[in-house]
Each structure stands twice: as structure tokens, then as C-alpha cells.
Length: 91
Image (tube, rainbow, N blue to C red; front, side, top):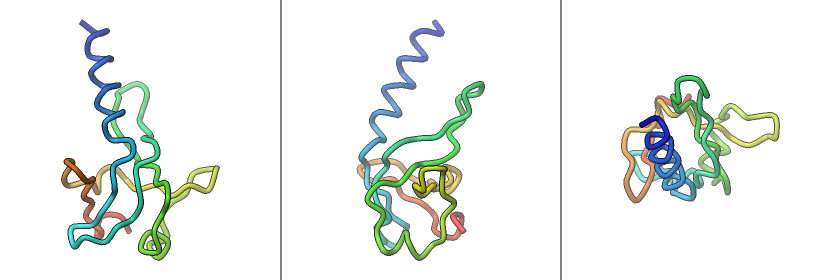
């Protein structure tokens, strides 16, 4: 059973990679390059942005050791064709 859940989680996270990250108002921030999660609980912590747009640059987002921008997963309000984030929850 645990094995099956693990496969589902992997598939889910792979589906998020490459999705465009936008605000509720349609501002484009970049794409999901990777996902940071808590290994014990599996809780999603951050989306790692690739190809950050000027909108993302203006937000002064937290960065990882590689200098990549991190969007808190708690700011995500919808997932579909795009990852929609609440801009007010990022800052």
C-alpha cells in the first residue's frame, strides 16, 4: 500500500513540473522547475521557479543556495493548466 501511494505522489509532482506560475490577476512569475518538500511528512514547502519573469524579480522572493527563487506552496490557491498563487501570500 505504501508503495502505491509513493508512486501516486511521484506522478503528482511530475505533473506540476513545467507548469506556468501566475498570480490571481494573471501576472506570470515563471515555471515550476522543482518542488521542495518535507521528506518525513511529504508536505510541499516551496515551488522552485525557473525562467523567472520581471514580475517575480520584483517580489524579493526567498532563494535557495543555488540562487533559485522559491514560492511558498502555501500561496498556491489553484492547480490546473497553471499554478495560481495569491501574490499577497508570497511576500
